Image 1 (cartoon, chains in turn purple, blue):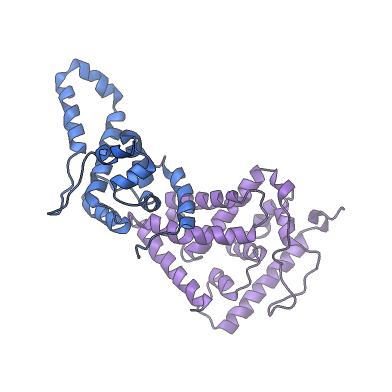
Image 2 (cartoon, one colour):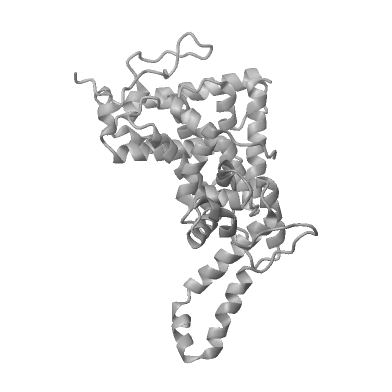
Amino acid sequence: MSEEATLGQLEQLGRVLHERVLDGDVTASAEVAEVLMPLTISRLRRSYHSLYDPHLVDTAVEDALMNYFSRPQQYDPAKSSLASYLYMSARGDLLNLLERDKRYTEHLRLVECVELDNSETEYGVEVKDEFDLEALILALNSPVWQRLSDLLPDPVDQEIVLLMMEGVRKTSVYADVLGISDHPVGEQAAIVKRHKDRLKKKLQRNIQRSELGEND
Amino acid sequence: MTETPVSLRVTKQLSGLVRRLRDNPDFMAFVLAAYQRQERLSDDALAKYLNTTPAMLPRLALCKRPASNSPQFADQVRQIAAYTDIDAAKLANMVRQVDTLEKLAEQPEVLESEKAGAQQIELRPGLLAATRDRYEREPGEEMSSQPNDETSSED
């Protein structure tokens, strides 16, 4: 089975489970946790594999699930899949945990496991080589993280940037966020590329080199 | 949803979430923790009482707690029982016992005032007896209502 088909099934399962959670179904929460917790942990661990305490990922995913269970109505299925929602929520919780625990900066190796983009990829665009967005935003003393929501008030834009930071390359994931999954694949790719280019340019324009920590 | 056994890795991940939900009365994690305290049962002993495996307990704990005063109580218990492959009657009695003792614990002033009224005192055994009372069982179902009877051999 193709990965896209699997993603489609997961998305459908998430929709069904979410409806059951809203309906007060007594086993739906357990099923959400059983299906999506391992997936979210795995994905977050891949993105943050150099954490000094890998259990922070587990804690963040637990936070995300507990938040979802207590306020399931905050999730809007029209905007993203439940899996994406939980991932983004857990990712935010993880960053908060890291921010609270400054020690992580001594242990975190910012391995360039993901690139902002790659000129060899189909959708590659020209960006400055030294523009390390991931390092920039993960730097806790950087004001960029706080500014991101100011620069990109649209939640869809924020989600796209966060996916880019995660190194997500699959057009289908971006298409899902943009709500264009029903468009032809070629059209999806073009639209996704246009959004990614726009956001990169916007970030490049607004983020100063001094914020990249290039004083050494 | 298939009731396949969860892997050890997933069980471990779910257990972390279960620990954090033990304080949330909306979840079976709360009920299980309360029942274990009341009956002084370890995880293994609880699993043995429920005739399940310790690995299945997180799945049970992550279910929402059925409301014993709800008309859907029996259906909800049956759904959880089917999902976890655990005896519905045992689950129902467990939830009811925890519910009842929880309500008693919420009314310390009433219990204090019992000294002034024998009528109130008579409610207590009735309430406690109700906790042992009954989920309607299917013909042929058997169950021990005394979990420690089953687990005393472990001690």
